[in-house]
Image 1 (cartoon, rainbow, N blue to C red):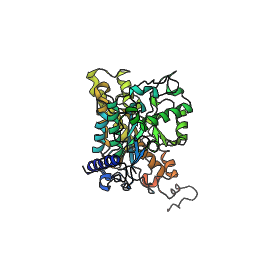
Image 2: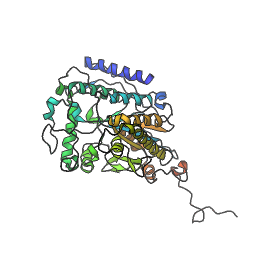
Image 3: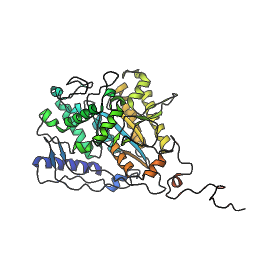
Image 4: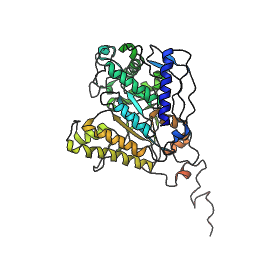
Amino acid sequence: MAATRRIAASLTVLVACVAVLAGCAEGGTGADEGAAEGAHGAKEAAGAAAPKAPVRMIGDGSTAFTGQQPHLARAERLKPGQKPPQFVVFSWDGAGEDSQKLFSHFRKVAQRNNATMTYFLSGVYMLPEAKRKLYKPPQHLAGSSDIGFNDRKGIKDTVDQLRGAWLEGNEVGTHFNGHFCGAGRGVGEWSVEDWKSEINQAKSFVKAWKTNTGMKKAQPLPFDYDKELVGARTPCLEGQKNFMRAARELGFRYDTSGVNNQLWPKKKEGLWDLSMQLVPVPGRQFETLTMDYNFMVNQSGSTSHGDPAKHEYWGDQMRDGLLQGFDRAYQGNRAPLIIGNHFESWNGGTYMRAVEETIKSVCTKPEVRCVSFRQLSDWLDAQDPKTLAKLTKLPVGKAPKEGWPAFLSARPAPAPKGVPGAPAVKP
């Protein structure tokens, strides 16, 4: 594919630039208009070509400024009466590359289906076990982590995936560090200052992975993480209130740690509230969050090794639940669909299959944009606040009764017949 060749060329030039450390320009370009339109012509306009800029190493060279991120479409304001696109956000908690190679696999799935995604990196995945004491988690002993740390190979493989993902237009967010959950010991009890410490440590592990691993000659991540990091999802969706206060002070733009119905987002604590959403569980009389973990708990309980005979059914159930939620929005209020997952093989990998089949089904439909949270935030910021206010009033699954052109028209709606100011009724 042309887009794949451009990305590979961009990465090759970047590597060469870093090697000489001077007088070189990053070779990435913005999204090609034809490629941006993809199979369904969903994107409004192709992003402008990334300006050539010298590669500027940051700190110890773990990260580098390489110019504007390639392969992003510009966010444009809706025209009067224009139906909103259907946004879908696929995101991954604790993103890292391990022996399962799910990170690299889903990058390919995204490319084949005209999608970009958000990868929420856990900072401790960039910290080797031998350096664990560098992590000082709030309200826990130094070197503590409920998800462990990494080794040199795991860090190298994760860096390779993060580099490629960013050059393809994906977002790198954060899932913080030690993933502490539950009453008495979890992030739900952290203060605003605790969250600031956790965020700054997550950044520091990304910005110093070369020093911490000793891989001084490795290629850098091609972005300034202080500027790239604009959003997050908290462990177990806990501690959102104080996290959002800390995040606002640190310049974040969105949070996706809450629970909501399929409604248009609003701002909360100065951030876009892009909460996880509830969708149907086919064959059951309730809804659950759009996340692999939540479907698993409702199917096999706390174990990720449930009855193998039910794996296929459980995967189909999650896929069909996500598709029902998608159709409800696509045919209804067009609220962005927020989906979150983990690079895990729970219940035989059935949830990874469900997500992949969902991506293939929805991301190639007309008027659908599978984007990152950052791209969705860009689009929301570009809209007329009055338009967004109208959209937030639409109930779950309900399109405007008068149709989209009239609902989002710039002209005031005509007065109903029989009220003051209404046109006279001809006999």
